[in-house]
Image (tube, rainbow, N blue to C red):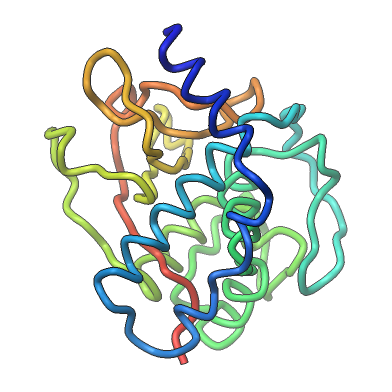
Length: 213
């Protein structure tokens, strides 16, 4: 673990300029292979940077501005780490999910416990089932396998923790002693980079490069 800690410390020293907006990649249509690699690298870096923040796990419903809204910086759940990582790259999942959900509401889950019959910019993008539909529709759906080499930095992973409880994280460019890439996620103790890829049942494997023009 000492090597992992040293790696994390190096990433915390990355200047803020490395996390400047790269959404212009996606705004100009299809990405080149080099642009895809660069985007995924920056997303991995942004997720690793999130582990330097202290975040109290709080699933409470919060009214937030739109677009660009966020819950208080010292609170959040697993989805907020995805949202904040993409925001570091200039991509607003609150806006993107809302616009697609508004135009295609029937494509998104309307679970009875939510009692929701219309879009809600405060919460829609903060629900894992909605993100799974969004990434399927607007991103790339990748195979779910039991091979660690099939999961690379920048990939988005969703799990069922048991009892149909969903969870989400981002694969990052730090390897554990097992040789697997770590995953940044927040399961209750704030954003952490941990070797949890196969700890729970994987339900989704995605890549998302932002809105395409």
